[in-house]
Structure formats: C-alpha cells, structure tokens
Length: 330
Ligand code: UT7
Image (cartoon, rainbow, N blue to C red; front, top):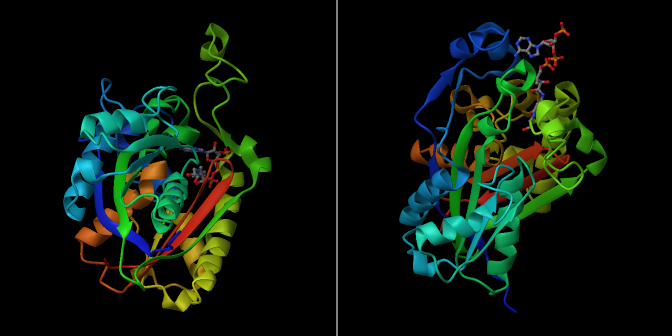
C-alpha cells in the first residue's frame, strides 16, 4: 500500500439564478434588512426553482471542476456527495450525479455531516487516493436548504441559501495537497440543530407535516457559541498537525454561516481580515456547499497562489466540525 500526497486539482460551483434579497424577506416574515445584515452579514441568497433538485446543481458544479482538472467522466473512480438535502431519501444523490455525468466506472455514495460534510468527504476521498485504491475522486457539497426551511419561521428562513460546490481530488507532487485534517463531533448537541421528522424516529405522517416537523429547527445562540469555539480550536489544531502555525495561513476559508462568527474566530486567532474569504453576504449559509463555493470564487479572483497555505474550517448540525490544511498546487 502506497501513501501518496493528494490535492485539489479542479474546482467548480453552481448557484440558482433567482436572488432573494433581505427586502424580499421583509415582505414574507416579520424581519428587517437591518436585523439580518447586522446579526448575520447576509444581504441576499440564491433560491432554486420548484422543479429543481440538489443533483441538478451538483452535476453543473462537478462538470466545471472536471473541466478545470482536465479529467473526463471515465477518469472518475469515486463520487461523494456531501448533503443533508438529497433529491430523495433513497437512492444516494451521488448515484444520480454519476448517471448524469456518465461516470460509469465510479463508485458513488452520499455523506451526511451537515455543513462540514464537504470537509468530511474530502478526507474520506483523500484516504482512498493516498492508499492507491483510487486515482480520481469527485467531492461535491450540495444543498437546497430552501426546500427544508419553514418560510414562516424568521429565525431560520433568513439564514440559508442554495448552492453546489465541487472539487476533483487527485495525486499531487510531494509537498503539495492536503497536509492535515481535523474531524470531530459532539453528538450530545444534536438537539440544537435538527430536522425532527421524516426519518425512522418520526416517519412522515399527516401529524408531523401539520406540526412542521420536517423543517429545520435550530437553537441559534447555542450553535453560535459552539461555532466560535470549534472554529478557533480546529484551526489551531489543523495547522499544528501540519507542523505550522496560525501565522503561516495565507488564506482562511471558513464556513459561511454568520459574519459575526467568522469575525469573532478570526479576531481570536489573530488572522488579518484580508486573509479571510467572506461571501455569505451574497449567498447566505449554503451548508456543505459553503466552503467549495468560497474556495472556487477565491481561486477565480486570484486570491490563491501556488504554494499558499489554505485552511478550510467548518461546523454544523451533529454537532460536528472539520478543518483542512492544504498546500495549494498540483
Ligand atoms: O451552519 C450552521 C447553522 N447555524 C448557524 O450558524 C447559526 C448560528 N447562530 C446564529 O448565527 C445566530 O444565533 C442567529 C443569527 C441565528 C440569531 O442571532 P442572535 O443574535 O443569536 O439572536 P437571538 O436568537 O438571540 O434573537 C434575538 C432577537 C429575538 O427577539 P427577542 O426575544 O430578543 O425579542 C428573536 O426573536 O431577535 C429576534 N429574531 C429576529 N428579529 C428579526 C430572530 N430572528 C429574527 C429575524 N428578524 N429574522
């Protein structure tokens, strides 16, 4: 069994065309642009059409990532879709993506780890390539949370947006690629962010629908405290694991949930704001898509250079967290 360095060789993203602004939300629930902007930093988000599903966006993001990496569907050995909003409970959205791409050789499965799902999936794909089992993996974070929130609940509906982000993972030269990773969970906090019904505990019934139990339920302040703590701890741990320090970070790509969470973590870490990617003002919280979308945009804007130390860090329902340290280059 060989151990090879593994890195990201292509990135892509896809978002719906429809923009929902804070002003639009003012007409839907009792909220204000001022409240949303000052409490979260979000100005607008993208919302998918009624007839669209996660795989539609996953496929578009995947095609872009594959084009950037210069790989064909036949090259792909593995597809992992990190999502908590699959097209349907069964089969895996990754299988639908595999068929749409014509990646007939690829194994395909979904991974459920909420917002850090894409980081969890990258780590799983990395292991399979590092060991020589596979050569090329497609790792997608896709979420259409607009379909899962209660549009009458102002405490959640203003926060989320729809998007997909994808990365191609392949072997890279020594010294490049994923240097270290940190994954963690505090399952005791599951009650702070969850969808009560629609699973085996409370299968769908007229009562669960009537009570709105298929929507996302969240204890915002509890998640906020957890987020600031783990963003900080996971960032420090992942750079130390790589034998580096926080001061070595060229670009931090944090989960785009709330600019106050990002500011608070970054301030504690002492990272200058110009080294931090923030795009949540335009997309809201897109859960597992948040980091690959932010990374795709940062690369397109020329904010990532060969040899840069890029750190991604995320938190979410579980409660879980994940961080990656990457030396950019292929
Ligand atoms: O990917 C992980 C997903 N989750 C998160 O990242 C969430 C983390 N948490 C947060 O980002 C913040 O807790 C929120 C943005 C969700 C809420 O901000 P907050 O500063 O923690 O506000 P709060 O929940 O303590 O609510 C403060 C007030 C309440 O009113 P009262 O009880 O003080 O009268 C809420 O009812 O703000 C009210 N409120 C709103 N007002 C206008 C809650 N949502 C809204 C709203 N518009 N949309």
